[in-house]
Structures are given as structure tokens and as C-alpha cells.
Image 1: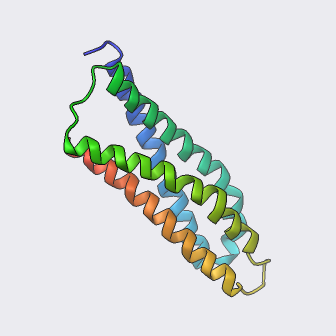
Image 2: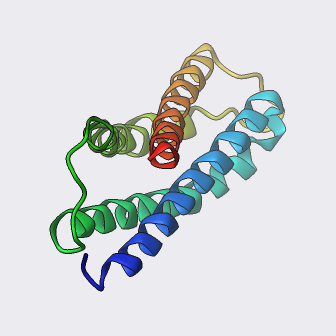
Length: 149
């Protein structure tokens, strides 16, 4: 086991906490915005910095995981590890779709204060919620697999 292993483990935990924590906060705020359309401007302002924290956490998680695999003493390729690797790849696939496609569309369609939401906005909100829920579920699944060992 390499002397880098404790540092990589700490970084891995930090990345997981940042990603899961920020993803959870973003989801809670999105659910609040769905229930209270007056909260939408606050959500729109808050979502970009929260997304940066999610991406940073996922980047730290990925790099520290790769560090463990290649220089930190390695992990045996168990079925659980393979599932986690596929889950991380899924997060890297879902994330850009949310950030570059779904979220900008949602933000463009946010109704002006006092205006009723358009059918297009309602549809974009449903799609956005579904993808955010999927991404959070994958993050939670990775966490459960990590805890189970």
C-alpha cells in the first residue's frame, strides 16, 4: 500500500461529500422552487455555484479514485467496484446533459414574477427534476456501495 493511500482516501471522501451534499442541496432547492414559483429567481441564481461544487466534488472523487487504482495501492476489481466505476461514468454522462441542455432550457422558460408557468416550462421542470433525481440517486448508490465495502 502506498504512502499516498491515506491522502487519496481523504480526498475521495471529500469529493463524495461535496458531490452528494451539493447535489442534495440543489435537489431540495429545486423541489422548493417547484412548490413555490416565487422562489424560482433565487433558485436560478443559486444553481450555478452549486453545480460548480458538484462538478468539483465529482472531479476530486474521480481523480482520487483513479489515483487509488493506479498509484495508491489499488483496489481489487470486485463486482462492487465495477458497478461504482459504471456509476461514475453515468454521472459524467448525465451531468453535462443537465448543465448544458436541460438547465439552460429550464432557466429560459422560468416565468416572470406574477406570471403563470407555461406548459413548456412545466415540461422542462419535469425533465429537469427527473434528471436531477437520477443523478442524485446514482450519487447515493455510489455512497451505499462505498459504505457496504
